[in-house]
Amino acid sequence: MKKFITIIFCVTCISVTAIAQSGVRIGNMEFIIKKTEHDTITQITVDDPCPPCPSEKETRPKPTYKSRVSDGYCAWGFILPNHGKDYYSTLGVNSFNIDIGEERRYHLTRRFAVGGMTQYSFYNYRLKPETPAYLEEVIGTFVKDDIRKQVYRSHNFVAGIFTRFYLSPPKTSSGKGGMYFDVGAQGDLAFSKYCKIKTHSAGKQKTRDGYAFNPFSASATARIGWGSYAIFARYRLTEAFNSKVLSKDLPPITIGMQFF
Image (tube, rainbow, N blue to C red; front, side, top):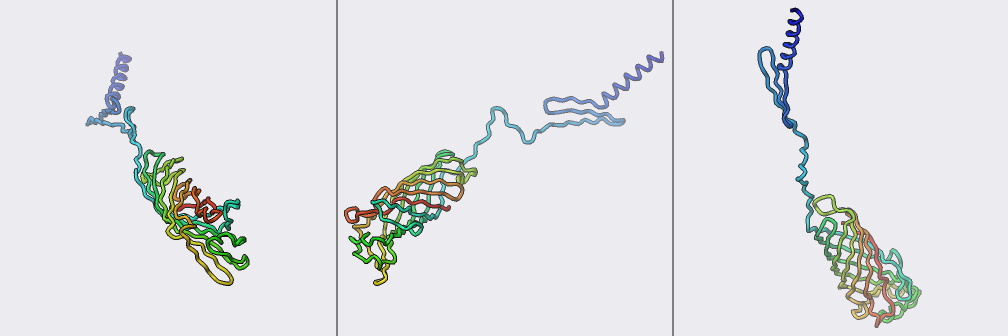
């Protein structure tokens, strides 16, 4: 009889303990019921993942980019000397180019864009005074030892077009930055062009000739850029001088750095 009473007492304790705190889970909700000596407490908890995961059918939106972007820039370049028989000899770093302009781009995809640019360009070709007959058909004949400095300069208005291929697309919605490669073409109109000579005996002499110095030129361009910088190369496809008047031309290649 004592054993029977002991068994009933144990079962009763286990049942009370189970009833005193029981829980049921449905999905991400859990119901917990706790019974104390005087009250019954019901607790409901909900598991809320943070951040919520998208469903299998849901796709995250892709970042958007401005389709139209404008950038101002300036550039400094150097004209590569060419000592071939078809070109006048120039002096390295003393022959340079300066550009100031603006470009506009239209992004067709994240990795491809087309654009155009307008700029002012200044060219300074420092010619070697070794042979005074360089431009004697235009400026006359000078004694070699009398020449101190000989340059050809032009001030140009430029318009061009280009296509851009992004090696690394921009990481912001502004459409700026990234790493890219451009190829394009441009046309130059020289609104001021002249040859300038300094001599020991007569000082400075400036010569303008609309027939000997061609006002129009066309060039192929290439550029590789990253962030706010780019390296450019320009190859002039047309002659700077009229071949009917002057027997040689100016070196056609310019390379330099562009800053946005």
